[in-house]
Image (tube, one colour):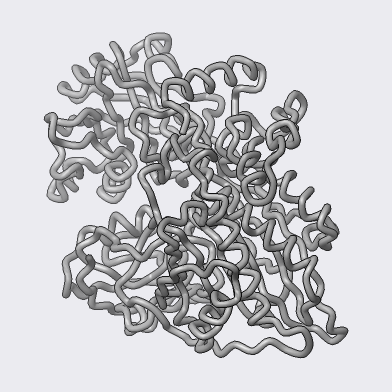
Length: 591
């Protein structure tokens, strides 16, 4: 393990050497001209097998492989080159190895942003110096009197203030009211203010607070303009709000979209009448320079290499492909796919099941590899064993076939915070291989030196043995799917690869579709026996109203869910095939 101080120095040198390339948030076209991916051979050296792949994918020069960045693009090119070298057939767009689409990666300020209070000269409120719109701000113009809200209740506006806030530009303090409190969540407060009829939200920052970065904001626009004001300008607005002075505000915020790519290849089956496929997948993106999802304190701007999460799974995917291409032929197809955007909410696998490269009705099973690089004491957890009747027996036989059997811990749940959930929601039996979390999870220190190469080799053996148990040398594969398998009390939101509790006092039992940006909260799946299931809500529905709250996206859904107690009966409105349906749901206790 490299010492943290030495590692920071190494990153600083890398960034200095690449200064001309340093802006990861520029449009992709602007990045491509000067950028050249690091040479794989020079990084890998004499390393072989899974560790060689991890060494390249988790190098600082790939900048943490955040979705739709140049580092992720280099990683995708590397995976495609490995597929090509193995003789696998491309199965992506236009006969290539990539399945591409555009994703929202941030926001930027457009032309015409301005902010005045009581005729104050525009120069006194300079965009980017004194104030900025948030990346989720509406783009509009409002003229409204200021009204100060001196204190928030639990970080939210007082619901009884509805009438007093209507038509006003609401001014709040962004700093925490005392050392043990959290600062105001501007997005949540703004959503509440919009529901109360406010015209705008103005957040006054503390003296040491920096203006928010639009480039990092991926949430959809709210219904009202939302801005942050700092420094001396905040004091001017603070004083003006006490007198009810009028303000004029124009905001222009534009979403930034870039190309994201899954990488896919096929090992064709030998049966001329083949019509089945087994999918082996792993996500290859990570957290880039930190930000949302990082568990490293004060590490903004430092590369998060994600050696275990999930260069390890990608490495096993590549070596499993090598083993299966060189061994006895299989009757049915094997699709190898490296997903991007998993860290942002299963974007890549959600894209695949919406636009499958092979028919889902012929997909026998999906095997998912996510964090398999830190096997300890021979332990390996396998989720999804309840999604097909045969899984337990298959795993026992496959494990017995490998050179050094693993201590398998089986979990029946087919849902979880990784890409297998997207397939299970479509009725495909799944297995998710996972060697457990560790202190470096989602932290700067998750580097290739900590990876267990022997453990990855054993996982590779196990996965290839499972494939050979499922897909015969001749004829058809046979699995018996089990619907509604697994723990009925599991995730309502993001997780770490294991079955975890949602953190809410109530639960509905839905699996959100995080790839949906606006127009409601999409549902990937519904847990069997959950309140949503009992009420008749299904996977594929889109929640647009939760009780009195309109739901524009997953954030609005989470905010609404947090306002109810177990046993509350709530009316939920969903869109299903364009039809608006209303369900009455009794919420259960969360955990």
